[in-house]
Image (tube, rainbow, N blue to C red; front, side):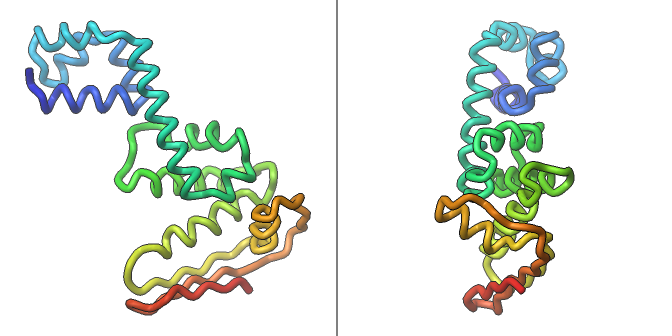
Length: 186
């Protein structure tokens, strides 16, 4: 069996819904197009669609768990909607540095459209600021927020009801080479 080609095809159908759909419409043709022999294509065609779908869902669940760890306040604020919005944002196979890339994709989605609550895009951008700042070396980032994101974060952490109105803030993340991170909201 062409191990490299087989692994690549399996990875593709486990992580990409469109590739999975295409594969199960014509499994032999797709397998042959990926460089597998006739016998290998026949073996791939014998895959059970329900089992493949179940495994693909489990991989998505792991991605959601990792994204929740990356954006914990956003996940708390969105509740059950977090996974649905994440899966909408991450259509396709995982990117390098998957947990950060998935969180960034969700952040872009939340910031790109009107949401309920209206400050959720700011919250995700705030958390992604700290994710970006975790890189080694010198770092500078400035972001504008339409809401008092520090109050929102504090209220989420304490379990209080979120009660804020639109008040602009600017966040500043700064670190000198080999220095500590400085963060301030103005």
